[in-house]
Image (tube, rainbow, N blue to C red; front, side, top):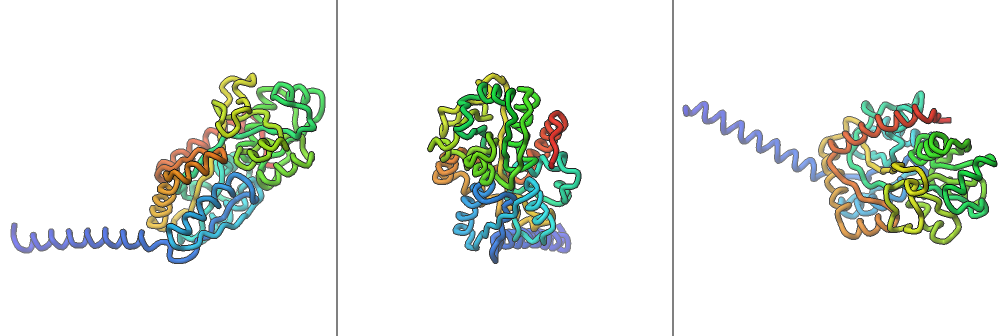
Length: 325
């Protein structure tokens, strides 16, 4: 090889190595200041519980505060819009639920476009949904509850229009059981549970984690879970499947998103560190005790999953006729 050609090859190799080193340094340098974690629901809900659990550990492992801020309303839309409009610098993170995949078909104007404005980073965990009732209803199983709904006007609360507990209940009650119940949307699972505890609504359809303590204490009655099998944290609560509706299975997941256009190094490091934390025995046990199943996966895998969820829930919205109001 002639000297000029050899020199060109060596220069190209040095430049490639330099770029790789620069990318590694950039990835390692994020974050260099506090990170804001916008939770799209009120305190006490599934997104809030998972986000705070992960954020507290990211603060330690990445050396910068991950500050949780609740921005509830619109079934998760307000928080999603806040992050979609934030600077794409990697320092504003959205923690939200399956609602982000539901709202594009449920809301006429969600205020953001998922594929254009938000970048899926990592799927934190999932949980089955749970139907609970106030003890005063007298219902102790799903069959009894449906019979009561046929003879009286009942209300059910959810974490908001567009959440999977909302659509799960709509599909269960209206499509399968063919009973008319009134949906009362709240700004998160915490307020929905409070409404059920206070008798403001007779029924609540919510993700499991924020409700477990109340079911165990007898303040609420667990009627059915939407998983295929009973969950270890509430083994006495039957599934919807075994309560007379074979094949019924729904889950709520919680994930982290960044504004579209965020630095690749921020995306990569947030994903890698979160996945590392989710794989620890401490995190697994804490999530399991709350009724969560850890998830994980790469940004590409999560993006494909979110796209599939958008298609799935669009069909449910169409079939149930659910609305955002």
